[in-house]
Image (cartoon, rainbow, N blue to C red):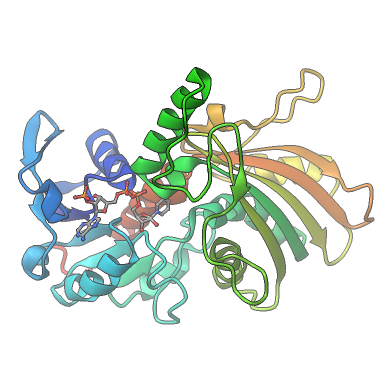
Length: 342
Ligand SMILES: NC(=O)c1ccc[n+]([C@@H]2O[C@H](COP(=O)([O-])OP(=O)(O)OC[C@H]3O[C@@H](n4cnc5c(N)ncnc54)[C@H](OP(=O)(O)O)[C@@H]3O)[C@@H](O)[C@H]2O)c1
């Protein structure tokens, strides 16, 4: 069997930890694993398959002999080291936004546009986490009943900002309950007992960067450059798993609730949770640690004859990041599209 030499750039982070977990627990032809992070983490030991692996510093010469490089160390590291890794013969699967809108770089959700992946030139981008979760519910409907307009509002977990986001929420929760003063280090506002507009830059249009990513990336993945998409992205005091309220307007007649439910339930990676009698619908707590995106509250929009509403929850560190990247690697292996495999 062919084995692949793998590196994780950002191995000590929230997404990196999930890559390690996936490589340890899922079926993957691994020949060797290299863990890379900043100089702060050099020498740190991470347990992997009953061995202690030592973290090395991410450097220009880190990628010699590497076949697959998972990057989750932030956009500037991807911009600096991604092309170097690709040049060294690795296929880079990048979790940052550095290359997502580059026309030469495929932007992949394996269930949605797998064929785009094989056209890579050494770098493949993992979409934004909220975008992946949206696409998992949008794509199966759009395929059968073309969508004209998407209106999405997000409820995004603090771990979307990395491991330090979870620590901030926990510390603030404790301080809030104890009546102590709240310290802000990661987020611009108190997150415990609060929510706020996503902490990315707002441009002249009034949209923040996260919202603009959802618009542009959705169009690129679906190959629909004119699809109307509007997004409102909100950070909520949840540790893990993003949720989204989605309104879809269809170009022609909307599917019935039963038809939409059937199409969603049949789509790999989606679980429909829509128990109206018992009021059980997607929740981030249930979606945490799960591969699948949960979809529910599927209903006809009473304000529009061709629109449907639904509500989603998905683990943004898994399907929104590491799992999607891992699936891209599996897809490339299946299609014999890992450059430099030995
Ligand atoms: N969290 C999510 O839900 C999510 C979802 C989708 C995409 N992403 C993207 O994935 C990437 C990582 O996110 P994360 O949530 O895992 O963040 P994180 O928990 O803050 O981890 C960041 C990782 O990057 C490493 N790093 C930071 N500066 C570095 C440098 N100068 N050189 C080498 N390594 C460096 C860190 O190493 P040290 O420990 O040594 O500092 C750590 O391993 C980001 O680009 C993020 O946008 C995250």
